[in-house]
Image (cartoon, rainbow, N blue to C red; front, top):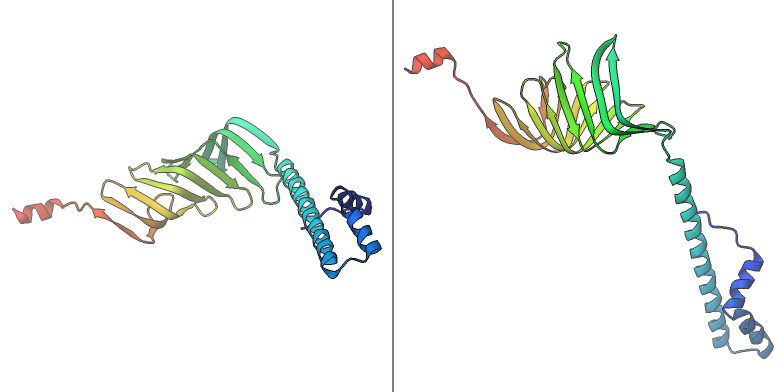
Length: 225
């Protein structure tokens, strides 16, 4: 930590207020005992320590205030809609009631502090959706971090609930390292950690428990009769 520079006059003012100037002068005139010198020395050290503490504290407060000012967004919008296209074909739509642009930061990002909604489309233009209480887009990596009551619903009836979910837009990959609950017409499961492509055709579950619904074919049914 870089403390403030304290001038000699400031030190003298502190000493004067604590009546240490008088004690020091008196000690040299009357030649006090070692015990007296030790007492005065202890007070001086205490003053130095207290002054340095408040100097550092003041510097920290100023730094925090400066960081707060530097973190101001370059743009704020309401009911914002951000569209992603590939060769003029719509791939995703990210929207939210409040949008804040922090592209002026060292690690630039876009933030949706009051909720985010994502519509994404597959090659057949079938839409799946993700909603969350909070969202942040890291501009350099195109990684979207969604938190708070995250719900993913696919066009074919699959559903995933999780407290946090990431969407890697560049690789079209969705994942979480936290808890999740997955339901579909033929499979129900829950666990910790899962990742999959946006079509939900490739799934890697890190650890789960659940039940599967096995449908009998017509031929199997006839054989049992």
